[in-house]
Amino acid sequence: QNGQYSEAVKCFSKAISIDPYDYRPFGNRSYCYDMLRQFPKALKDADVALDLFPGWAKGHFRRGRALLGLEKYKQAEEAFKRVLDLDKDCEEAVEALFSIKVERLMQVQYAVAVGLRCQAQYNAWLAIVFSIAVSVDYFLFQRMEANSLWIGNVTSNVTEKAIMDLFKRYGTIRSVRVMHERYCAFVNYTNGEAAAKAMSALQGCEVANTKLLIKYPDHHPSNTPKAESKTSNIPLSGDKKRGPINGNECYFWRTTGCTFEDRCRFRHVPENRSVDLKP
Image 1 (cartoon, rainbow, N blue to C red):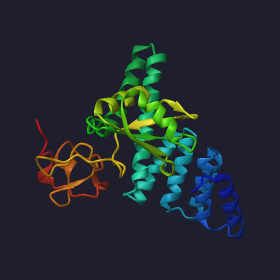
Image 2: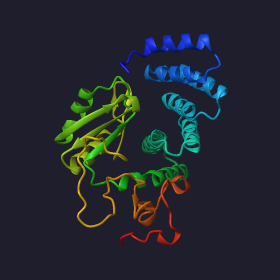
Image 3: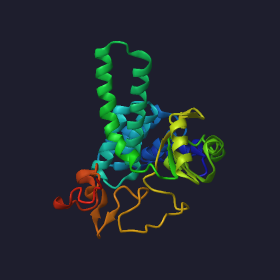
């Protein structure tokens, strides 16, 4: 909790020497190695933990984090999907999958821009760009009016001051909240235009040897004021993406479509599909 990860590694190593068949110290040491950016060691410990307990959701999450640090995005994506198979309510895994899709999109777009000349190759890459973009545009376009930004891939080396100095160039900031334990931060602007400009300009920006991943938040931090709805019980665009209406019915099933399908925790009433979608 105090950022003393090297000391924590020693403690967990001692616990492992006492009981090498307990999967939990391996998972905890993997987390410490992750925070120390020693990703090969983090992956090794996560694999040992999963050998001891293959059905441990947190172990698969730790493996995904290590693979993400090693830039093995396809394997990381598989690990986070496995987390959701075991724990469909794990929001950290959902956020990690989104970050991977954004990173893949950025890489493909860059490759197309600087390296491709042959029309056939260009068309093939364009198809890949489109397929990835379709999978992420739902998360992006639902929140175009939001004043807040979620910043991912925030390691312990990225300070609150660094975030503030970087993002204040694009508008007046109401608050900044850094959550190192979840590898993310929230920046709250006074208006949506500033947030949109910052996201466009800083996507993939490198800070303290890590590339920031930016999106509109699925959940606002607790100190973010919420706007009041003046018309109906339909949530505002910044609300939780799987929030219920009419008791326990999925809002997005009734409007633009729910990408979580059978993983959604709320009801999908067949006859109400897209019933509230505005023309």
